[in-house]
Length: 160
Length: 181
Image (tube, rainbow over all chains, first blue to last red; front, side, top):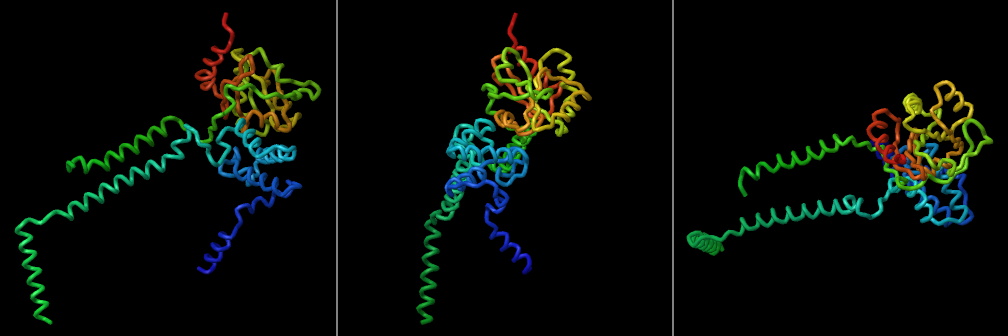
């Protein structure tokens, strides 16, 4: 149990960019650019092993693309230029975060719509329950209720 | 609400989900298929040697004026070996011209492969560094592009070429692209 706990704690402490330690060959004079570079390759999907980022993958194509992006940054191109370069060749698929456009509306708004439908259903069910609880008493029931209440009040008075 | 109607809700939900799943299975969805943004665009500019000779350079403009399949291949690629026979058969049938793009390979190995298995390519471009393949959005071999006489890409297939794919999908497109008369 202690081992498990320890492992979990260690896992949680892993910095997200740990695997980027192998990227030491990419050096920049400005720290800003180094950060941009890391951001770009973390945000791009490796086309060969699709659940890895370009930063994490050791596929040959990923290495080539990292080199290409590095060269582009070295030659002074901006982050957006590089994203455009990649999307022009590999499509939106290369981006981990899909852009907002008609074909991706279901991804962006689908969960919200499902949530709203669920909310409406829940609201209606709850309201119906309240209605059944608040049904009014008939005259006869009212009388009986008063009688019972008076009775118990009398009882309490008598007790004191 | 009618009691029967209310009890049939789980059934309706089940039918809805089942039909979605059936639709997903039936449409032959391949999660490894990545739609190419290059369809409708021109093939990228390049100037590369051929597999046969480091001194013969091929440019983008050399490929204009013909409808052809651009086939990305390599000797290290197992699926390329699988589709090679189909490519040889296609090129002998004379139905389409095939241009090769040899991707991140070694010249000697590529030459040995062609002399051993047959050479379906009219031109075989040698992309040692894989830079032109990046411009083509190649992410795995084999990939095949259908290019028209103006150098515009009309179709891309990732994976081995089959006669079925050629006859059902590519051939009608090729017929449309070829000049009439």
